[in-house]
Image 1: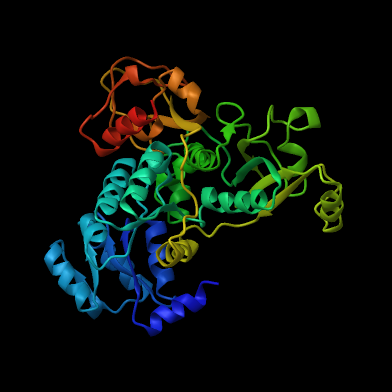
Image 2 (image 1 turned 180 degrees about the vertical axis):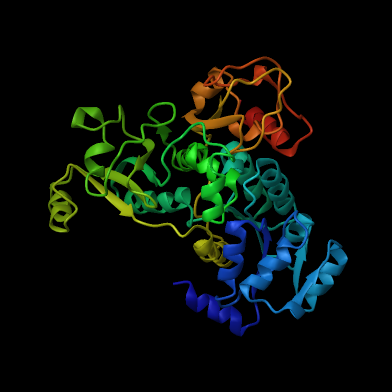
Length: 427
């Protein structure tokens, strides 16, 4: 149980002080959630848009008199020493200030995610990585650097990859053989989706249209399943996964090898499904007759495959729970400790022209598809996490995968430097 430990910390005056980087929908939500908790607070909130961090703190219920707006590290440190909160456009204050226990990266921008997480690790801070786009690209190296520094680098159990890892850990710890793992997709798949086509819906849902477009075009799902695959050593069965229409009742008949009547060519795969969002799942098997009888008695079905299904994930709202466990127990919810098995590769969303600059996830230029890491490496395919800001060296037609040879990368960017280093260490 976590609550008694939080109450003990509260009684001892040992509040877990969190640095939040990014004040979009997720950052604002987790900032508000912490105000309801014992011994936990968003001590520093950072966003590049002036005033947005203070707005998030006010919306969370923090009194205006307790908020200090500053980009000066010394002023921020003094404010925290005086038990004030800090709102800033300087992300480094959220990652390096002495009083901070854990930094939570929630921008969704790969370059920002790489830079601030590296900075936090080097400053000796634990890291909650909510930026799956960055983790899918350089998560293996960031995890290694964190372990070397003696701090925790973890994904959240509130997002689909972490929530699925928890189910996988539960099943495999009991000795079951997991054959498939994945999530539901709650938006109809449209590879051509962009901020313009998603603008009206995004406005209704109070979302960033680019973020919504990254959900609709499938890129977010691909990045999430890449981080899941890398955390548990699974692979996509085919490029882009299969993504069938499915229900919680028939998952154990669908995500299984074809020799048993399913759709997958092998066990050990990640996949997604239409019709089971916002849930996550694993499908497992056992050949032990007593366990099979008990699973049937427990209404999971006659087998030989069974599914475990969590019908929700609370994203940022439950992330403070997993941050607290990282700080108090040194616990990792999900991370890539072994060489990556999957990659999110870059596909042209339209005809791309020489000299064109690729925009960000959910933009007009490209979308991502999950692929096996060894195939991506053999074909020199460009990771989607490196694509934003890359300049086209040649024309690329709609639907064609991009390779490293097709683009000019910014070799001075943090994400590119880290990826080069990760590839060198894995070679």
